[in-house]
Length: 267
View (spheres, rainbow, N blue to C red):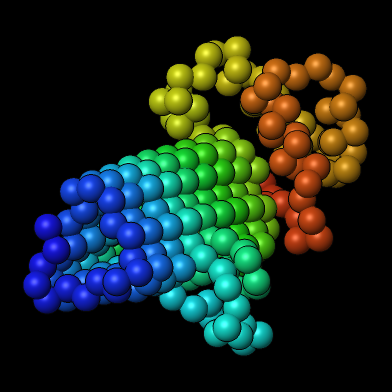
């Protein structure tokens, strides 16, 4: 299962039925779970740990040093990948930039061609990141979020669960759960299709819409909206929305598209 031209360090630990393609490199002491496939020319750094049934595509580089001017090569940090992920061609995932820190990818994710995860990025479960999306250091992406092709994210930005970010958009502010975001730090509405596909009930969707409207469509600022939300009882999904919003830092949240921009967006 290991091609003769592949280079596998003696300290690397490979599980059962692992396939390693031509000219791939696995450094020690990387740990690769059962039934993983490492395709040709991929490079797996020694500070990488991955679970079972992952596919690492041609030329992908996992666990290389972060692009951080303060990083010291002797720092011990790593990349941790769950199970059942597909990492396509030329994806790059950098290890943490400070001692004992981790860049993580959950389970069942799809990282398409050329996607980049900077140091200390945290990606949840069943996330889709399309071609050439760039996630700066410490970006957090919640479960079942969708990142469109060519999106760029400033470091420390958060993207909530089941959010969707339009391709070729740029974000330096947080995108709350369930929101459809676009352009430059703008919210276009709710990810209604994603909510239905995730089998949210009509009542759950209506409550999430009420939370969205209170935050984005009322005359209240964010602090006032959070205060008003605290006076109401919410279900679990809407509570997760407000918990995310309340943890926004100085960079703040995306803002609602103006009517003029909305017409251009819809065209």
